Amino acid sequence: MGAGGKVGVLGGAGASIMTEDSVEAIVISAADPEITGKKPLPEESVLGNIFFTLLARHETVGSTIGFIFMLLALYPEYQKRIQEDLDTQLSGRPMNEWTVEKDYQALQKGYLGAVQKEVLYIYNPGSFLMRTVVEPVTVVDSKGQSHDLPKNTVALINNAAAARNPAVWKRPPVSSVRRTALSDSPALYFSPDRWLGTNDRPDDVDDKDKGVPAWHAFGAGGRACLGRAFAQIEMTSVMATLLRDYSLELIVDDKTLQDCQGNKKSAWKMTRDRAIKMMYDIEMNISIGLTKEIPLQVSRRQV
Figure (cartoon, one colour):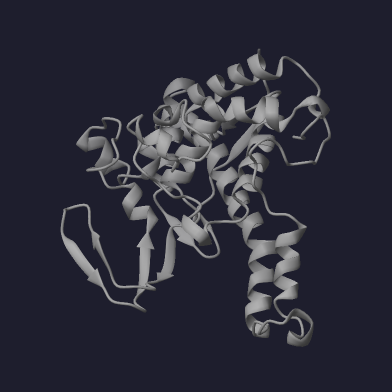
């Protein structure tokens, strides 16, 4: 998705993305102090920053796109709404005419952006953040209890737990029997509608007036993710390119169909419930991923 009709140019109005200057700053930080006039960073710090700059954003974006595709296969009604938005916004234009200014902002306001935000909310690849307290501070937890954090305390911010706090985030109604049967999987509570019409930055102040709690999938403050805009534009481009012409579907195996006596609708529901339960088991490394495979297929879209 380009700016001004040029593919691969990820600028655009108001965009703030990683540029050559970001990488250049890391390299310069290790330069001879006689040249820069500044104390250089240790080699391990420079190598660590280069590693995360070049690798981490690809891992986290890839993981998030994977979860987006799986959840859209589980909830085809939202996949259809995205496709309808794409038909309206892109109007059959070729990809080299898609732009950040005209198309990205509009798609972020619709179901495509809402699904991205919801997936980053329930399956955030940055489930935990670590920060060092630079000055004594008092924080208040979700139960109203105060906690004093002394200077130099290493604080672990649990984004995954915060996002699943029912006192703050509304969940779609699910029966207790179904919650138990499907391991209370986060995939049960997929509800992109909450994000419709919000900005492409879910933690913006303007969105708080819409009843959406503060949420920081990309971190916050001076150490927020440098590649945030790049990641969001990349995910939007991938989703628009695929879903304009194709659909994602769960694969129903022959045994499940046989167990349901050939009833395709029942077999699909059984396959879906099995997949939702599998999406409870998550492993975390650089990013997050499933411990089991959920087979999907890509089919030509039926319009």
